[in-house]
Image (tube, rainbow, N blue to C red; front, side):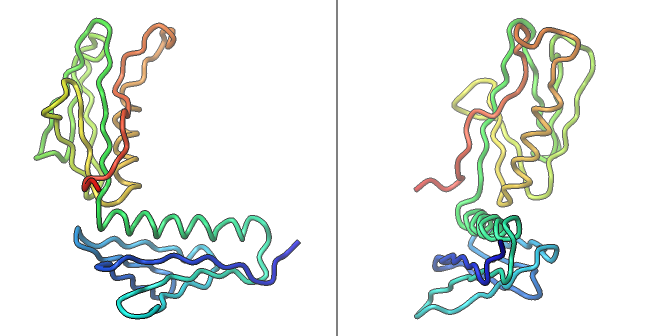
Length: 192
């Protein structure tokens, strides 16, 4: 069954500017600018002024089926994550786990790439490059902990996934060999 009109609204906090032109969304805040192209989704998107210094983004789907209406909340969440990114930033913490051979993580190119050595005692050197706007650093407080920071949640989480994916255990029982680098915490750079 098709719905005639379904809408979603998102309040934009002060200090964040949202610019929408032909379904290309540009969010600017204190930490920088993020741009997202969502032309593949057929949807009305408008940035409206709601009173003094307040902006509201309205999303609308006309004559949409169930899957089409589901895109409303998805796009709303995407814009919300962009707003959080340009105000607070995203931080992922990763821990190196090993039973016998200590995993050695070397940060290169001022936090733009990571080199992983001695994983399961292998001689292979693994290189993982961070995506745009993501920096990796070693934790001062915790041993064997990496901190990934950036404004775009997709790039930060994909960089974390690339690090975790490069340390998969092959040809062994994964219930016994639990070595790897895993995400231990997801938070924002600026704490409330």
